[in-house]
Length: 249
Length: 185
Ligand SMILES: [Fe+3]
Image 1 (tube, rainbow over the protein chains, first blue to last red):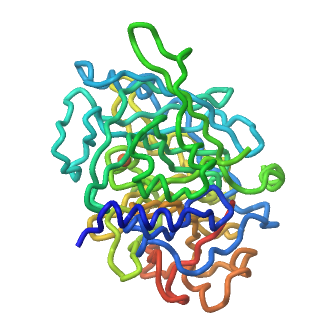
Image 2: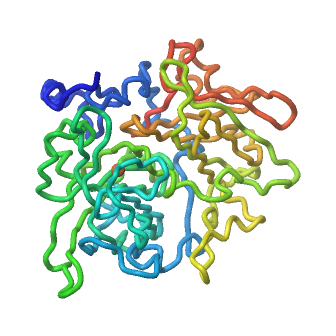
Image 3: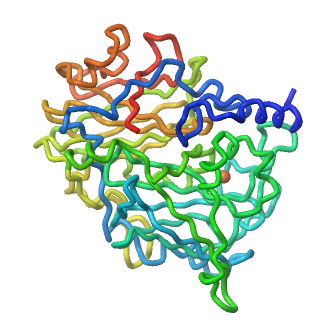
């Protein structure tokens, strides 16, 4: 039988103390049921202090102007008509642990439409598809490490982790650093969402401050009169110790 | 600066991240092309149909500077143009099939870095995992030397026939079965 929200919330509360000392979720996080059979039980082998400057994870794939087109960053212009929903701009910088901008690297996003439905065959949520919205975007960061997307605010959607499970509105982000070891896939959330407390995926980040780093800031200066609301969200990529990265390049 | 936490790739990346020719790191039909393939399995040995694997490797000449063009777009239509059939970019991205299988066409990595670096994403996996696929004749390097002897074999591909290498990824299992994963952070 599917657990109730109360049962899941009690498990979330029991897991609340950070256990790993890192920002990232423990891969075993029982309130998120799908994690149970999909996490390694053996300890990971440390590779953050390798002396091998030839380790290929110290370099990484590169992307360029052939991999994107101008329109890829505007999710509202991929069809003939305007998508339904609240038009937004999402922008920010991609940085490494030392605060250095990650330049010219690929940022990819995907998201549900304003009604909370993905344009994915296996999304069976009864909310309507929007013929004018697919929900996929990509761009390259500029010289300051900046990315920028125009899209619509995604809706919350139900999922089957437990009875009455709803995901807070979010945009999925995929980021490349200058090294393969800096790879990150994550989700950006919107400030003040009432679903935060109930969501095992967000709450898998058990450290409050780290969890806040997944929430974008509304930025009125970014809002465009008569056009769109602005959100700002910076991303800091984890990865090998900075000295190692420098030696390796 | 403090890092942005990871979150799962979720179940619906399939229409966003995979791209045509993502598995063709080397053009199909190019002489010297080899195939790596296998399954991604969970803790009960069941195939994982919604995993995404990324591969990064040194070029046969040892170069690891990479080249753009993995996801080449048509700048007239905005559609996918596919790889250019010439450039070795070193980067591959493959979603597992409904039966948990994946395959990759590439060139053999050089003796000084005789492995493919792999990044594993999946629904249910809150933070990606790194591993390596070593060629069967790879000599022990620093990473292999750090791995307990009884677990080392999980990182070696087996040559099934000339140019075809098998490699399964078990996210969870007994110590000698579970794939060894590496922590770079
Ligand atoms: Fe989602």
